[in-house]
Length: 243
Image 1: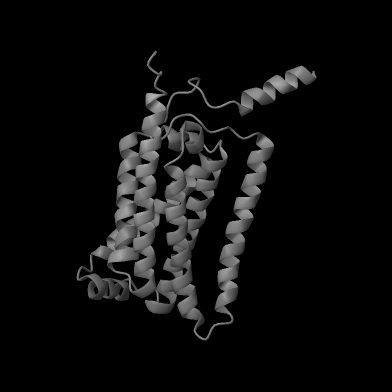
Image 2: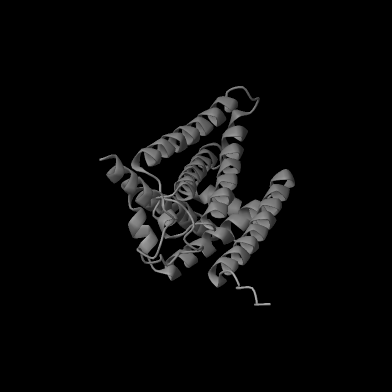
């Protein structure tokens, strides 16, 4: 029995191989390790608690500030932006099992993606409550004043639907999400990335703009590094020439 258990554990712990077809969103060679069910449960518990404590901490901060409405509007979007970039950085390292949330990197990216979208929803709710008075007309006018294009509010509405929807799909049906066509994932991330860049850099002000620019540059460097690393892995080691 002990030998059987050892063989089973080794099968789970071995690097991912060609036994599974690659996901359309595969971005790295199979070098990560699958988690055991107990490890998945432990990581999910940590991810759920960490995100919940972060949002509760932000709400607690609002109770001790002079203008709690500013805190409730600004801090959720800051948390969302940081979580967004952190999730993307991990996504660039994922293989098929990672996209199916079977590895530590995949599960961590999934929780960052989920809590980032949740923080963004809090930001939207607080902005509509404190700034726009739950008025679409006022939100439209504010968008027109800020960007010169009031209809851009509809793009924001679409963003508000797509990010949480994608996060929910990753939580509830990771296999289906990993198996969707590559064009769908690329289109989604291109759209989300454009909106985040505009919000965090182009139309941001002060420290938020600098932070957004730094995060964007860091992600670009990380992306180039991961591409180079994957290229080296795919090419494999070069046999030394005989002397």
